[in-house]
Image (spheres, helix red, strand yellow):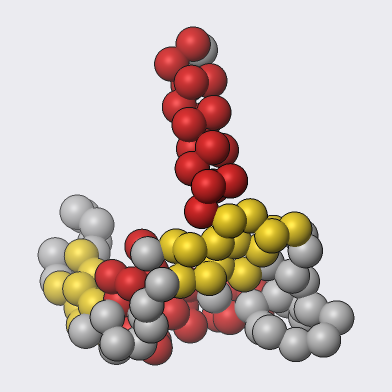
Length: 97
């Protein structure tokens, strides 16, 4: 189960429980459908090639969404080393601005 805290000032500060599959759909296919993006939020031929490759199954443990092995962004494969380099570059840029 995934715990979701509602923001202060909402109807009630209630903790809601979602299954991992509901949480993943809420973060992926549901926004794509809401925005009417026909080629997003799915894995299919001719769909957008944006994927996150994980080291663990998020349906077994939602924390596995933090175990990112690689990303495919606009069809370009970014391995863990490339992602770490981008994070370092962003941190350096943030420190100087």
